[in-house]
Amino acid sequence: MAGCLLVMGVAAFAFSGQKPYRDLQASDILSATVRLTPPDKTIQVTEIEELVACLNEVVIYNQDPSYTEYAGQAAVFTLTMSDGSREEIVAYNPFVVINGIGYRTKYEPCEKLNRYANRLLEQAK
Image (tube, rainbow, N blue to C red; front, side, top):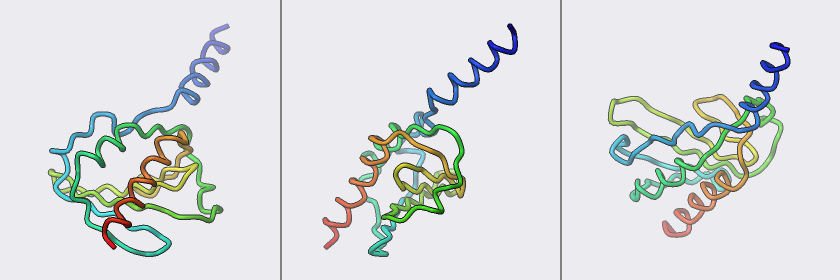
């Protein structure tokens, strides 16, 4: 019985997901860039609040290294944090890669992050 409850608890955690950036605030970030590949263009993010709002919604599930087998556009956000650390977040639906570790992600928030990056690219033209 205890084993069954443990399995159910682990399954519930795996399918409920986590929001790794739910507590992130704009004041936590000194600067941010986004590189879109393709077309291999890097843009300075000036509206940190909007980026943070998108990141607050990102939901990750289990680790999944199979993102390396996918082809498509990646939006690579590099954040320089106020404590001097750096975060690299890659929106690569159906994955989010955080500091080199790939996770399955909830589709809509990841797609919103990718659309945001593409909108920045269009504005930079």
